[in-house]
Image (cartoon, rainbow, N blue to C red; front, side, top):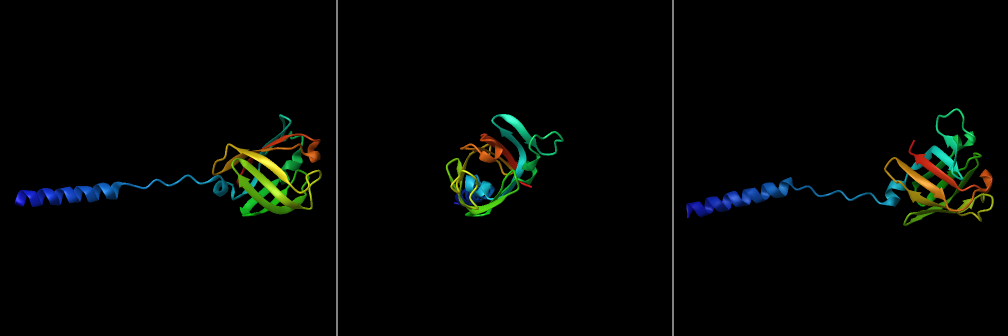
Length: 149
C-alpha cells in the first residue's frame, strides 16, 4: 500500500512539473497590429528606378525625407507625401492591402483614396507598393520601403 501511495505522489509531482514547464505560444501579431505605427522612408523606387535612399547624398527625389505614414491611432491616418503636403483621413487593412480613404485635402487624381499592397512586414519595417500611379511623381508606380523611426 505504501508503494502505491509513493508512486501516486511521484506521478502527481511529475505531472505538475511537466505542466509548469510548458509555456504557451505567443500568437503572431496581426498585420493590423504590426502596421499600427508611424512609418518613415528607408528607400523608394519609382517605376523600378531608385529615387531615394535614407542618408544618401545623390537622391534624385530628396523630398522623400519628409514622407511619413502615421497609422498609430486607428482608424485615423496622417500621410505626408513626397512634396511635404500632409493629408488626413482614415485607413483600413484587408488581407495584404492598406487603403487610405477620405483624405483631405484630396491628393491629386485620387478622389481621396490611395491603396498600397503590403509585403515584407516585420515589427520594424514594411514594403508598400502603390496600386495606382502617383501624379506627384510623374505618374510612376512607387515602392516604399518603410521603417519605424
